[in-house]
Image (cartoon, rainbow, N blue to C red; front, side, top):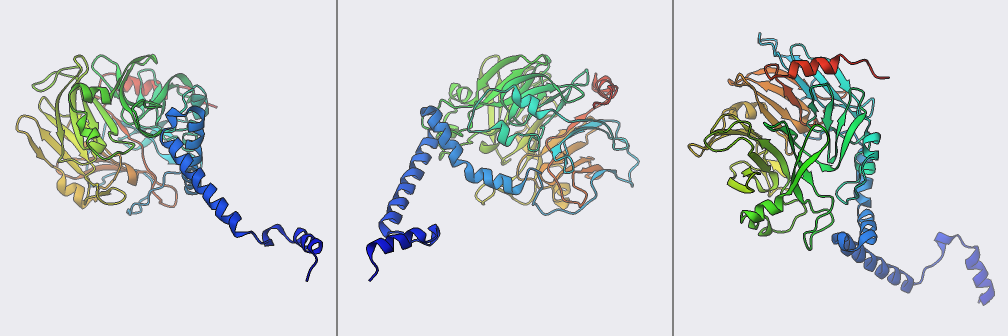
Length: 456
């Protein structure tokens, strides 16, 4: 029998990982780990009540997501099945149509490891101007802290994807991506930054102001998690002044519509406000100054009058998880319908996306390009855009497949732009914008943007 002192010496000489561990130690460690996990989860769920400790709990809880994002990389490659096509712009060779307009697109450049913003001339696909926003300089002007987004982690230069950029008269751009809203010059340097979480559409009203969805950095709704998306409507001007922020919850409650989200099972993103479409001219069903709202996670569209605080009408469906509402005339709107089947994991598209026309006069919905969308397999589960053009055409962005198209009323393709790396792997776009040369100021804005000296 080994003497106690020799046995102790033998244990000391053994490698650490080879030593025996008493069962009670394992049981104690497992119970402490379970208690710690439950405590972190409880703190993270109501982080706003626990100050700095709550924010630390949120950061710990997000470690698996952070590791997953790091593993996937920053480039927004799509996994959706698609036809491999060469990257770039191509006109339909069988058509004599020449597009006189321009487009702002946001392709991801894998060589540079970042998203860019490009001004494309659509008559020949030539890139006239490219912006490389100084993301670090923009983020440095932000002071908010939120569990919803961490700018240094989630929106660094390799991960920030400028969404729905807007070209201004002097050639500057407005950009955002669940980030502060910023105005950058031709060299990508910020002229001003409005701090906060701005996301999705950016549209101009008749009075020149701009409407954009906004998310509160922290919600004061009792009992919700730290990542609860407390949405709002933000109105700003080109000088960087925040005119108003109005919470969507307050708007719904004021109009006795709070039950639309409170009556559902809890989720952190119950609304997902993705489009605020300003009414530019008064008509039978709206007035100049009204806005049409698209709430993806309710499949709801609403007409809201900011001047009175009243919602004039709402409609849920037949669209599902829709994006991008556009006004066609004094009684019709167009909706890009993602047509998502919510009961399937991953929110799968039910067949393909749809372009729906809702006629308020008849209360009827039509789908004029149903065959085209089905034949071309236009399928993006999230995001997506449809811009009506002056001659009856429509510009469609299939966001997840990195494809932008101009489609004629008969369903034929005018041109197509594909976002892909040199091997043909598709990369997401981020809400391209059509610049109509018939729109006053477009040509002068294009000239201003392209006349500037090259940046070093």
